[in-house]
Image (cartoon, rainbow, N blue to C red; front, top):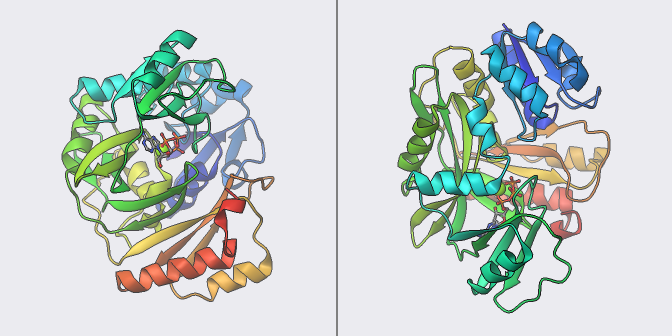
Amino acid sequence: MNVGIIGGGQLGRMLVMEGRKLGFNFSVIDSNANSPAGRISDSSYSYDQYRDFIGQSEVITFEFEHIDSRVLEAAESSGKLFPGKNSIMLKRDRADEKNFLKGIGVPTAEFMVAETRKELSEAVKSFDHSVLKSAAGGYDGKGQYRLKRNDKLDGIPDQKYVVEQKIDFDYEASAIFVSDRNGKVVMFTPSYNLNRKGILLLNRAPISDPGFRDIGERIIRSLGYVGAMGIEFFVVDGKPMVNEIAPRVHNTGHHTLLGSTMSQFEAHLRAITGLPINEPELLSPSGIVNLIGKDLDSTTRSEILSIPGTVIYWYCKDSARRGRKLGHVNIASHDEASLKKRMDLVTRAYYGDDPDKYL
Ligand code: ATP
Ligand code: MG
């Protein structure tokens, strides 16, 4: 089976690594010939070679949302693209995503869409505290601004925004859903997320499900979705609301690489290639610490690996910079208290006392 992946980042890289177990071959299309996924694939293509890339692939998927339109159109019309274009179109504009969720009755933060300066100032005035999110192109908290009702808009760039009520959540959580080609939907054990400065620092499973499954199934079914989808939730007074959806494998699903009966990457590949999927089971408490913003020297690498239950994934990106995800550590343990301890040790080994310096 030849699987084509649009995007050569770490998510693509882990799809390739996990797909090797099934004997699959991979083609990757990316602007960087030496991308994390491209360098371990069977063949890599630049965007102007997209016709060859599509011709070569039996099934096509993607690992990031901001896909070149030509490639997206051609992949969709080839009939090989899973999940389909409808899901990725929701991520072109956060307003479309929020309106879609609202339209199918999924709870979200209250929001307003602001296309002009006047609409923006009205929207900001309508919430005590708001989070402004650029409608197009944001990730890892980039393009976001936090304002109070009477704050001025000085320094806020002119663009379309979704202005959300700031949510005072109990905690943040995620669940990865996977749907096969016959419409069977499974959910990985939900996990707890700790974000700092808008970027995921830690994630661990299990947590209980206060209603994630119903919401996820509704989203998946209304899109006729095939493949893995990450859904980020805020839990407020014990009830879930959706922060955002990611129509692909997701950073908060990396815990499934260790301590689960299958990984999110394998589940995604099985689903899109027509292989069976079944409800994943968590074999042991399991978490990750993201490695963000600085290289991994050999002393730190040894220090992390001396902590029991750890596995390092280093993505081999071409440069380290502040706020950039460069790797993660999987950590598993027989009980949750010991998992948390191990995760603290990993965090300290890599970041020292202050992760904020690197985020
Ligand atoms: P990514 O795609 O990498 O997950 P993103 O840039 O799309 O990130 P969001 O997930 O929308 O951004 O926001 C990043 C983080 O900012 C959230 O995980 C949460 O911690 C915080 N945040 C976002 N929206 C709100 C909100 N309405 N109220 C409170 N916190 C929020
Ligand atoms: Mg997010």
